Image (cartoon, rainbow, N blue to C red; front, side):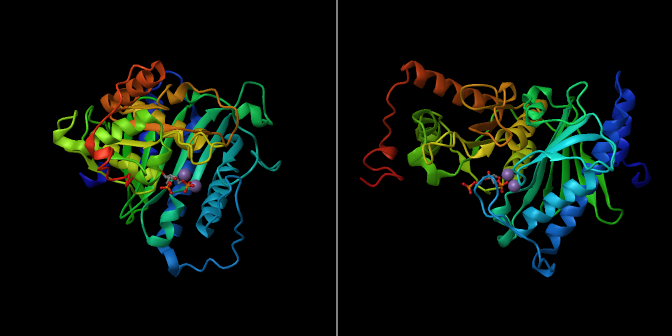
Length: 358
Ligand code: AHG
Ligand code: MN
Ligand code: MN
């Protein structure tokens, strides 16, 4: 029944109708966010055909060189979401400080936190990228939020989601009651409900981690990956598959569709950074989606959603995906911290290691 399909706009309105305490402003804000994601999808799809001359890029607060599309996506998010009267402020990966809503626009009761373009190292090689967002409430009585007003744990998120710009553009959203996926129908320019009630298989035989960092990992992470690679002959008794797309959005999307484990764990590559990914606009929204889809998200030592943020650009270790695998990694961390993990002695990772040549 093509005329009866559920667009994202319709889905949000109907969801709010069912809620005991509807928030009309949230409907309006999510509408602006989906418009921004459509604009970014178009910008990303044009690739080298687009004329991007004149875009000023710099080294961002993360210490990373921006790509033109990082800047364009950030401008789109800001410009599309600032005017509607629903936001009191924004935080972005690409902006050092919180963004103040210009005085000419009314202020609203929400805070928007986002990574405008995730996986931007994939842009030059035409691989999937995405946008990640998290919606928080502005503290009661505050109309001009300061940085501290943004420092809320992930459990306080009102909504979270991402858009993925792959062969098709999709938007995946949680409003705190399940996870739903919408595919952009380019013919009518509308995200359309195609993946209602997404759930993650509890167990998996697929993991995603940047193995080039193996020498910097903590022992519990090495133990987990070593055991996976040992396959059917090892303690897991099964062969595992590995993927690494270098785009968190793409890895999370794969896990939502077919299960798996993704991690960017704590490492010692740069001891000033306790992880690669950022808590407020990468880890928290994805952790909410994981939990809402029946999965889990942890640093290895604590639930991501319960971390009290200390900074808007704070980094954290991230382990997320199928519940039993995340729980196994949490157990390995606990055993390591308690000194009760048996020294791991697989021939694959000692003298004849794939990764150690000595
Ligand atoms: P961003 O492009 O927003 O900086 O995020 C990239 C992140 C994440 O998407 C991905 O999981 C990870 O960085 C990739 O890291 P490596 O380059 O170390 O593989
Ligand atoms: Mn990112
Ligand atoms: Mn980014």
